Structures are given as C-alpha cells and as structure tokens.
Length: 185
Image (cartoon, rainbow, N blue to C red; front, side, top):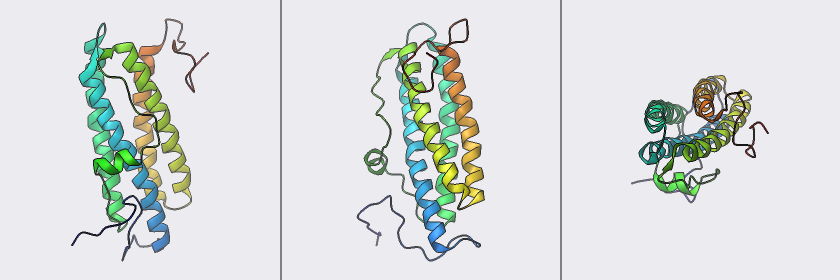
C-alpha cells in the first residue's frame, strides 16, 4: 500500500539514513533537497517550454542554446532525487507537488520573441540561483556531500545564466533590461 502524507513534500518516516548522519539530520537534508528537486523539475519544464515557443530574430541561437541546458538540468533532477533516496527518504517528483510548492514566479511567456524569453529566463535563473545558494548554505551545516552536489549544480546554473545574460548585453557589456534584481542599471 502506498504511504499517504498530508504534505507530500515532508519527509515521511525513515528507518535509515547515511552513516555518520543522525536520522534528524538525514530528514532535514532530504527536505532541503526536495525543495531543490521541485525547483529543478520546474526549471527543466520551463526551459523546454521556452525552447518550443521562442520565435523571431536569433531564434536558432536561443533555441539551440536551451536544449543542452534542459539535458543538464534533467541530470541535476536525477542526482538530487537519488541523493534524497540515499538519505532514506522517498523523493517526490509528481506534477502536483512541483506546482503546489513553487516558490518562484510562474513563467508566463508563451509564444514570443527571443528577447522576451531571454528576459524571462534571466529572472528564472536569478530566483533559482538565489534559492540554490540558500540551500547550499544550509547544507554546509548538515551534510558536506549534499552540499558538494549543490555546489556543482550551482556551477552549471550560473554558467547557463551567463549564457542567457550574454544575449541581453549591449556592446558596452551592460545588461539592457534594467529593473530586474542583479542587473545593471
């Protein structure tokens, strides 16, 4: 019989965790990673949505830039879910859990030009990286192996963000969409 919980993102009862971690720490790490799993799943879907819906000048460059990001983010999803399972907790990857626990703005850009999608993806990456850094800071107190995994993910997420931002720079190297956090005025 399937275990039912009132909140499927909370770690259920666990009977083991990684040697060297207490059950409480294992559960705490799993809860942090579950939040990142939700966000990574959302990011992969959002990137694919942008890939399908980008049009206009520079279409092919943006279209082709996004697909490798989708592939790498799906790898992050899998490694995060497997780490949660290694901690003795069931990772949850259902659409309902992803949608109901989103803590980032919804991606509302549909069929649109490259600049509109790039601006929207810039915001997505800003939120994603900020939350991943907060998770990394929390994990530094709990589990260096999970922290290392998140640091590796941050390396790629920051690189992908740079790819997006490079398309948003003017010839002087300034981001041309002021008003978003982290962007030049």
